Length: 230
Image 1 (cartoon, rainbow, N blue to C red):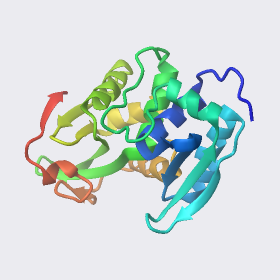
Image 2 (image 1 turned 45 degrees about the horizontal axis):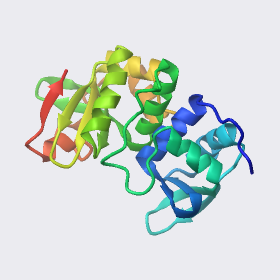
Image 3 (image 1 turned 180 degrees about the vertical axis):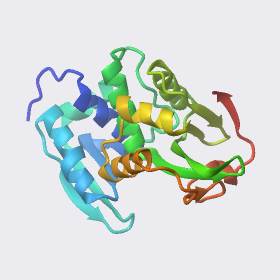
């Protein structure tokens, strides 16, 4: 299928973010992305791909990784994604969000895709917050990409922190107000993450939640990280 003059829009921006996070461009113009939630892959990812490229990727279940994989072969779509910043092959340590993409809604759509792929929503408890507080967290294996995301969040007046380690970086958005700002400006498209964040935003904290040393809080299991921005 020929894809003539594919222009950047929010659907394509979202695909770029999600494929950077949980997908790849492979040989023979193969495009893949995966997630454990079949509904998300069918109703969000495939539909956005179809809107951007007029192609509906097929889906199969990968029993080894316990995930649903959307895939398609398309030279035009492959080259378009590459043109807008998705690197072929092993990309996680080198990929960046293109500085030439200056429009706010496009940059936010890329970040939305990244958070759907790699983000999590956590209710935290520590010694200073007995009733808990809300956190949105993202892990990437690329300091430059983490800084790109931070700069976009900052431009949208969403306060975040970056913690850099030897092999990965963590971005955190803490507190109900900042998470509300994220939800309003960028937001998740993933139904489970959307539901979890919305529930937390609408519920008064009761002190029941994930503790500071919980499984999802990666910072509790490493010691060399320092916040470079607040």
